[in-house]
Length: 96
Image (tube, rainbow, N blue to C red):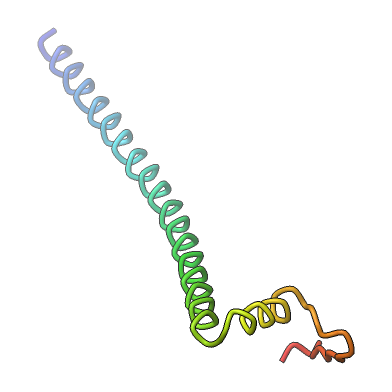
């Protein structure tokens, strides 16, 4: 009887240890997946930040490089695709 009780307590201990180990491993895996997805989101946001900073620098350069009329004309040409009435605009579609 004493031997059977000792065997049962030992089995309970090992079952509890296996359950605790499994719980910890699953927790670590779930946390690693979460960390990975957060790192990807951070990389995406950092890329957006860099693009926005580059655009801001370009706009700052445009603002400091001429008069208000020149700025409006440059924005109309570059961003909106406008041209003067008798002007011919050639677009390089080769991509280089």
